[in-house]
Image (cartoon, rainbow, N blue to C red; front, side, top):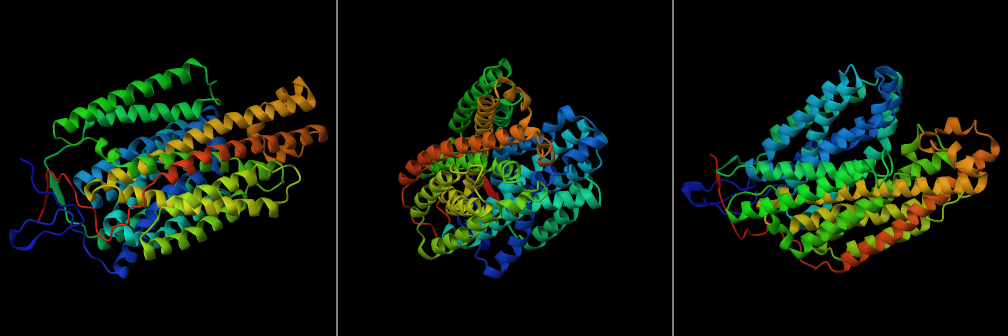
Length: 536
């Protein structure tokens, strides 16, 4: 017989009375800000680590060798993060968010320490995967705990802080990575996580008070395994397709087939688990909510367009505009500032009014406009002009980044808030993976075509390794080749942003169909409580 459920956020009822199944502890703004400091540090760790490694990779390869495995240092981290995201969300819902979140911090720190101690490339790849496993829990844990602590109506005013963390990670990551590598050693890009992570652990342990829970349910291991295989296969498709292997190769086709079979099997297993009254790793009933399904679709589009497109902005600025690679993070500052300012304003407006539908619609429209403006970049565009275009794109992102998470959490019962957080993160991440891969293939094709048309068949072959050209190497190219390459990169970027604008239109359509459901001042009542009891 199922027991009454009380989420981690509720307190035990006095005198043995049945607890409110959706009770939420009321905390003062000061208490929330103290807890938030630990959450922000954890989020910074997860987001900064991938950015900080990039500038150190040449030094790492020179020290450890294994240049053929270079891409796997990044890929292993992304694979582990993406694959573990849904599982971390469900574990938090089942066994308590505080304990699971702290466990993910510990795993991340162990992976960081071991990565810094790596003696060869294979060790580094394996330990980076362990880091990524912990990072998946960091990202989901931060969002689900915030969803538990702060009602949706009040959550908007805190979202600008998370936008600020993203800006710091994207802008500061390459700078910090380069500085540490130059003045200390590449090992310290991993060791620096240890004091920050320890501080986050202490703050969370002392200030975050969520009742412990016990549950008769258990994680759906078969479903979790099938989901993990399917996600890993999908990420490998997006990583390999058009880059390591041709899209029509047996490697990519095999991964697509494996993903299709695994995910189909996963859906079947989840249906059976739900029918037995057990706990599926990803409850399919959450997708019965129209808003939840639509916001996941919108998250996929945002990830596809945003991460897929902005990946190539530093390449354009370094190759065509002659910017320094070391300061590449600073080149994105106009976009980050646009995102940060708009996110803060929107957050306050959402808290004041409790309404949100207008913001995804405006955001997708502005994002489309930003893409169209950036599609006008050419060899003569000044940094000031491109900066203005990036402000527009950043503003569009500011309307969308936190609202997608907010709507996802507002569309489910409190007991499923971890699943909602992980699903929103997952769809945006997968969208970004597909965007980077497909836009990368498009970019490569346009560069090769432009070089061939300007220099003949030998031009495309001479620049076959254009993705690895550094600004220093470009300065040594013959003038005609350099000019042709500049035009090729500009044409490639034009195509990427133009197609990005087309795909953004899909986001506009999805946003229009969102329903205006006023944000709750308290958690959504759960319609089907089960198996969780307060542990006193």
